Length: 370
Image 1 (cartoon, one colour):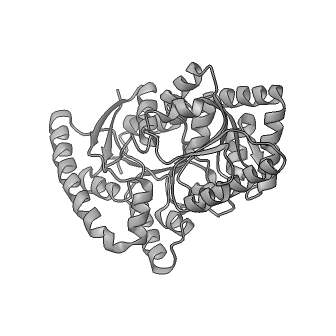
Image 2 (spheres, one colour):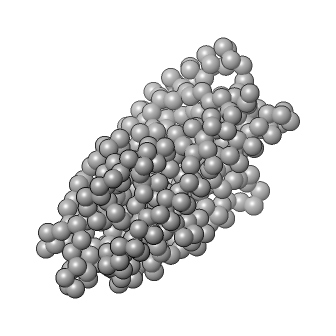
């Protein structure tokens, strides 16, 4: 049986993507062991470090401490088990893949490169030399890998033509599907959850809710999260008593919370990054049984098909009209929820990981090395 080693400082509690890949590979017949020393730093925290380099020293100390443990555990594992058929470096593994390349020489290394550091920092306001340095970090990470995983064809096009790559949709963890199956009473109408970054388009959501309120339409709405645009959104919505804010929900509680709502909102920005991604919340919300509204972009249209209702990016009026249509027609709402749940079944851990499992099995059979 093909043996895969998941390796790095990934944190499945904060970033479920690598957990989806691990579960999916196991479901597709691979044995997956983990050497994991989680770095307790969110995506927002990492980006903050990238934008404020003086914070890098503390990050480096923490990372090196974890790396010492990872290196020790990796060598011990290989003494006991031999060489793995492949090493999977989890999401936000820009640095971890460099360590993996050093330790696991001659072994295929798969890097889950969901975000480009330079692209993400630029999307959040960074400029100039910072972006150039982060682009360099992206290139170093990609060059250290045998296979690079991305989530959309648009991200794949950001790679060099000779980079070995594979598009693997983000998908949704099983706990989101369980929450969808268990949900009976949907106690509120609309939910958004995210980081309130420009990518999310939360200002567009705020403007759409304001437009609806001027027509006397005030659906109960839950906004979960915080971030760059948080205060601006709160200010715009402060006069609407139907909107409530929750700055933090434990990851284990989020699926049930989302599944208790009838409609879930995706992303609505017009930023370059916003036009290239299909966010994890869309896959998760479909799995949770919500009707999903998100922006009409090439990757979302391609991936989601009829599983979500698509609105014009950056257009609050378009979003407001779509929400109003769902709220005013119970049959349309029920159909949208059914369509979302049906399409979500295409993005289980097993299904999204199947091509990767095939690639690893083929390499193991042929004995091809990095």
